[in-house]
Amino acid sequence: MKYFGFAFILFLTDRAAGFGTTPHLKQIVIGRCYEYVTLINPSSRYNCEEIWQEFEEAVIRQSPCGVRVKDYQRMFRASTQILPCDKLLFWSKTRDLMHSYAAVKGSVWTLENTLVGFMFNDLIWCRQQDRERGFDYHTCPEWSTCLNHPVYSLWKQASVNFAAAACGNITVLLNGSIHQAFNRKSMFGSVELENLNPRMVFHVHINVVYNLEGPFVESCAQGSIMGLTEVLTTRGFHWTCTDNDLTLIILQCIKNPQWAACQRCSNSL
Ligand SMILES: *[C@@H]1O[C@H](CO)[C@@H](O)[C@H](O)[C@H]1NC(C)=O
Ligand SMILES: *[C@@H]1O[C@H](CO)[C@@H](O)[C@H](O)[C@H]1NC(C)=O
Image (cartoon, rainbow, N blue to C red; front, side, top):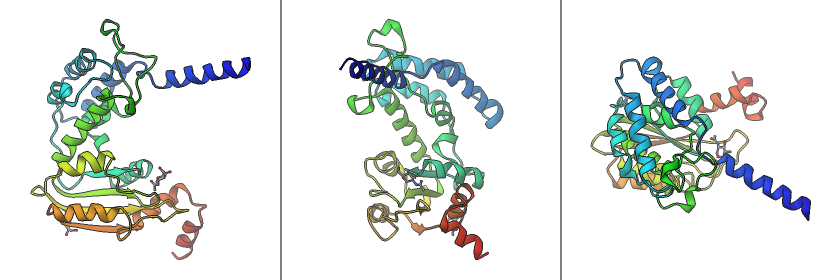
């Protein structure tokens, strides 16, 4: 019993430590901002110190579960960005593939390619109960237990801005190996889709991708993705939908050449 108790406490502290504010948050955020304006997008002009200050202010002023979307308004104003037409990529549950797709296509823009997305990617933050003590590096509330989680609110506003700025042709990458490939509760389904403007977006290209080993659960003509195409049609968007885009299969095969599906592909060349 004693042993069990000890292991349990270890497990809890481990978890708590894993969910606290990312260590060196300030250095990382400011450093990424300078990297962005210096190396990644040298033509852009931003005041990285000011962006950090507005961010810190937004998080510290409110309770740990009470940072609303609008509390980040000043931070977003300091990091306003004009996005290119015809290049935006939206995705849901296809994170790994999205990265290699973006790398190969070169000029594709995901939320993580924007300044705010780049600065805050994979980071966690929250304030201590006692405002004077600043960020809580030990533990942060889980998203589900918070009405206005500081991390969620920032990503929500970043997603709204990203979608609202979309113009020309856009691509949506969905995962056909899971049920609810189009999930109305995902950031794409609940926030981004709603903020796309049919007068600015010329064409929505949906790409359904599968794990090489399957399962093949949903497609353009089956399951939740039809819910998406319905919404698009109703709102007046032009769209096309492709399952099994060859570029995407080849990208997956480069990473996993041993899969049977990839052998067939190389044998037929
Ligand atoms: C689809 O989703 C599953 C479960 O989240 C994930 O393991 C898999 O890598 C995803 N497939 C693709 C092609 O992104
Ligand atoms: C936009 O999509 C349409 C329809 O697929 C295509 O005909 C057109 O060439 C695309 N334009 C650009 C700039 O990609």
